[in-house]
Each structure stands twice: as C-alpha cells, then as structure tokens.
Length: 304
Image (cartoon, rainbow, N blue to C red):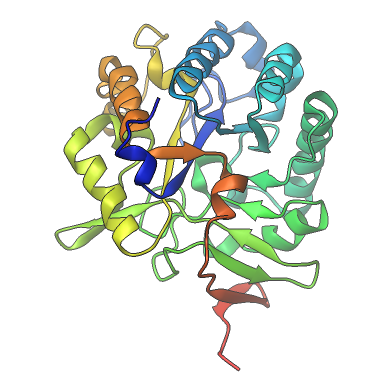
C-alpha cells in the first residue's frame, strides 16, 4: 500500500502497455511478421499476472493498453483484468508504428482492435496509445479517426525528442484537442529536464535505467508545476529470464538494461506515490490547455 506520506501526493496514472516480449517497433527481428507470432514462446500472461499481483498488493488500479492480437489470443487474461477493476485501453491490433501506415490501414487496424477489446472486456475502451509512442506531427491525421470510433483519451504523445515519435514544442500538461468529431483529452507522457535535455523518466527503459531518486525527483518536479504524472511499463520488463532478441547494440541496451531491478523499483514507486487509471487520474486535472486540429496540425487555441 502507499505510505501515509504518499497518500498526500497528487494522483498519477499507471499504464501497462500489454504486449508480448517480441513486440518491438522500428527494428527487424525474427518476429517482425505477425504470421510468426504464434510460433514464439508465450510469456505475456504470466508476466501480466505478476504485475497484477504487484498492483493488488499496492492497492492500485491501472490502465492496460492492450494489443488486440494479445487480447484475442488470451481473452481470459483481459477478463481477469476487467474483473479486477483495471481499465482496458487500446494499443492497436498488430503493434505497428502509426506513421508506417496509411490512414486507411490505421483505421482498419484500430477497428479490429476495438472490436476485440470491447467484446472481451465488456468495457467501452476509450483510451488509446500508439505503438512506440509513434504519434508524430506527420500522423496527426490519426486523431479524427480515433475520435470517430469512440476514443476519448490519447496517451501517445511524448513532449520530447525520441526515436519513434516525440512532439517537442507541445505542452507537457494534459490538454483538450478540439476536433470536428468531438473533443479529445490528450495526456502526454511525463518528462523532466536534465541539464539542457528534456527526457521521459517514468517508464520503459528510463524507469529501469534511472536511479529511484531521479525518478522520484521527476514526479515531484511535475507535481510542483501542478501537473499529474504518468508511469508506464511492459509486462516483459519484470521478467529478466525472457528470451532475448537479436537487436542492434544500443537498442539491446535500452531493451534489456536493469531487468532484475524492475520489480523492486516498481514496488517502491507504488509505495512512494499514488497511482490509478488514466481515466480516474484525469478527473483530478483542473487546468486544461486547449488546442485545435487544423489541416493535420495541432495548434494552440487563442484565448477569446
């Protein structure tokens, strides 16, 4: 459970990108073709069950942004998550970078994922995350498609430079995006300033690489700015014994660094700060910058 001191902290979102250990973006592997996925060793169920135990021990609910292929293959896992009170979100069906798809391909993949996730979970599934955080400026065309099909919250934007995405000149605060199809709440990934660089700190390889003190400092710097935070993790990251993919050296370092430390670090994080689902966390936000979607761009709305 969170400590008494943590109970005084602002609420933060806890996200799980629910995918298999071989779901890698941007680098060719033996499992780049979805036709090969059924032949791979299966780890996502038992790894997710470890995460569920950790969250249950901490008294925390989270948002499980789920790859549709995983949900279709392991429907009992998705039902168990929903029954435990976790939020089910969408992480595409085939885990492909958004900017590698045409709008038509993106919509087809999204509809397939949403059909599976909504049918199995019994939830409306209104939250979306792009694979690899690949919501870049050149694919903002995805937002009207998402909103048209019932997505009301997006957690895809990284307000910093990164390999697969990144929108450096956008607000770090959750913001309202006005679209013809309806308004959408966009919740950027938490970042912090280290020297002259802006970097994520609270999920994935950053969570595994950075010391606990730096991660805590990142959350507290966001809280001092009146901003809720977001942590995220993949099920594979609590399994140091997973199969290893053949990856380029830097990618391999990012993918596998400090695997053995993830579980104790995660438990300490959940003890230090308060976390919940994306939807519940956003109910605590009081300041919402407004942006308009105009001709494929996201532009800050002018004050009246």
